[in-house]
Length: 149
Image (cartoon, rainbow, N blue to C red):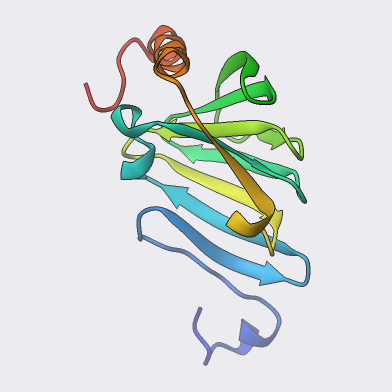
């Protein structure tokens, strides 16, 4: 954002070239972030799901590829799903639903969620080897190969 621009008082423009999860705009109770290539979310390091207990979470794929992994149930999870995100569609993961994702290196994903979303109001579930294998199988069915291959 150029603070010397006349429009700076009425319009903010944000962008980022940094990798990972980068919050861009926070206003009162919500936050918009950009997510790009996450090494920790690559298939060979995919080991857990998360769920947010106080917010839905919206994903919008702008570029590249992203698979959103979802599961229902508690521990153990009962059903596993994989959604290959399509460009410019809005995907809303409901509050309390287990999820994670893998991204292609060129992926850019917008995330909208409550501004106070953090590990303190989210839960994490370590995946068993068989659960990881199931998610990996689903990803290979969707993409043919995975980003690290």
